[in-house]
Length: 125
Image 1 (cartoon, rainbow, N blue to C red):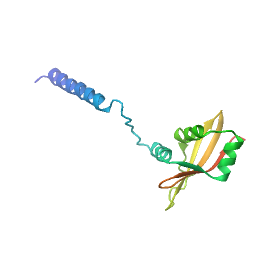
Image 2 (image 1 turned 90 degrees about the vertical axis):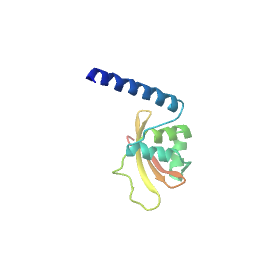
Image 3 (image 1 turned 30 degrees about the vertical axis):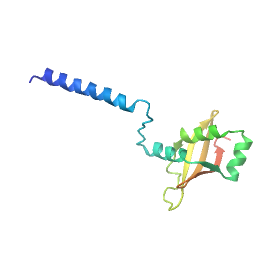
Image 4 (image 1 turned 135 degrees about the vertical axis):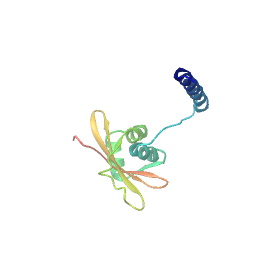
């Protein structure tokens, strides 16, 4: 069999496989969260979120709503060097993000069934 025939068979099978995958995965929320940052943020976002007194004061002072807080976590960058990931019980993650052109950092305690925002603050102030 010539190379061109093998290439044609390969490309034909590849195209059929793509079509089948598109058919089965259409409408499903399939995601590829392979990076540590993406896995951590997805894990935190999937749990109910509570707030410490300090975080509640910051939220009230700056008129933030729950959707904004969820987006700050969801689209934030986890700084693992500032996080406490070696704890046995609930791990504490340091998340950096930008809100209204100001750098903001969150410290989130991630337990098995709940995530708690321990502190929030603007870095630039």
